[in-house]
Image 1 (cartoon, rainbow, N blue to C red):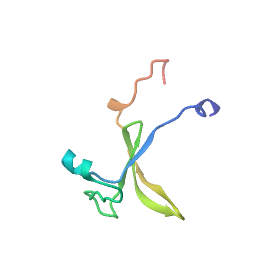
Image 2: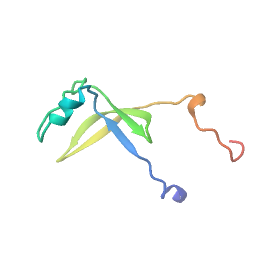
Image 3: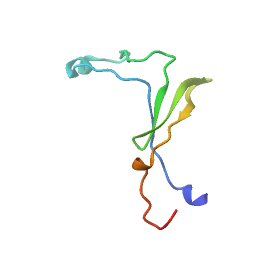
Image 4: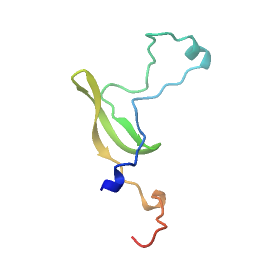
Length: 88
């Protein structure tokens, strides 16, 4: 496992999405609120290196915000990276 200690993965969590004209976005100031297309009980999407890998729920950890993973998504063999270093 120590060989994995120096590998970093970019984790992103998408709370929801919204569309708006660029002029509206440019007029927003500090404290502006962007309305998202989800409710507070909806799952969030968890991405690892821009690949959707799981879903989860937002949780409060004292003064911090965290994500509780509710489902790890399985990837089919057609989208798994192919190994080139020999048999599995």
